Image (cartoon, rainbow, N blue to C red; front, top):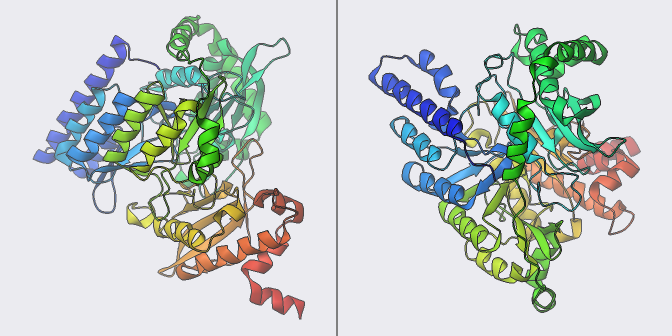
Length: 556
């Protein structure tokens, strides 16, 4: 893992001291709320429905055991004993008191963490594949590139006041687990004709009120050209992006209104102009960063007890069937730990759970953890012989739910329970779906399914790219939930289609049940997933299930 340089340490400490002074002036009344607002947002502090909210950066989703323990300490000392992991691999504290925030930020700095650029019209937390450095299908670990981008973008003097917020996602695998096509810039590791590793560059993706899938602006960029090429893209956007209408200010609108050809031409011209300014220092830095991400010393040991435990214990077997992914090292597995116990708030982790995860990562996982954009925690390096003991320990804090990738593994934004922008509830809908399908015994029968829920049109719950997407809206003071079908967040990224009128709050779960019972009736066989059935048959049979009265009228 990357460790702060002296410069990093000094920079973060200086910013923390500056913000402490700004908070003191706000409390004394020397700063008005309007004056304080841009200062707090630069340091990840929001004012939500009920309290302040501090959003902490977890660059490319990677945490050490020490950092996870510190997050637990912060939750206990200055919040309500829990944190919320988000779809940008951040953690949010929902209840801090303003006088305590500087102490929270100092505590973060003690373990090489911060909240800088987790808000504002700047380049936000760089996200990456949560299996990075471990996945069997990986071309290369994308985290060194993500760290290089983090250092380049942090406090970049030209890009602190962009037309709108800006998000970059990176994957090192052909199987996209980082949703790169829904980012302002998405990067995907590829091999050139000579076998050299470079990056495919995608621009103009994004969700929100105008969802768009990103387009390839360059199919291959050499590593030594990547940073100047990214600077060229953001520089052109900074000049071309609209500032007259925040709803049309994202780069996706810039590309759409000007056309990819014109935008690409401007980027290439800018790239040629600034490329000589990059004298190779970034590549020297990249080599140093890459050394920090050397893989741990994997054990060459027999997988004692793993298959025997699977054969003996059906609960353990079920957990391994859903929670494990293929690791690049023999004898190892990637473990995804569900933060979606049935009825729990998706993405929430108590301080006790965080401490246990830190301890287990230290004991069984080479001290590393990852936060996924799907709001779960990943132990990327666990030897299979340790899995029975790991599973037993996870059960003590309710962390052994065997539902990764199933109906109850739902992405959900905070919705109206916390967010000042939300127009409908998200968390209760997710909880009711999860508990309902467990109660009727259909979760395992339904199999792999991605349900994503947003409480407003800003789409923080990624509903546009859910196999089933749910968008909560306000219709004349009443919550109304639109359903979209056929979205995809992988390398086959696709925006889901709205299928018809929305549903009242108490109609959502029955509608989803009708939809999924119809899927079970029409799938080709048990191996055919929901999204495969949808692609084979189209939306009509699903619309008929969602709106049976309308289907009866059409039939008559």
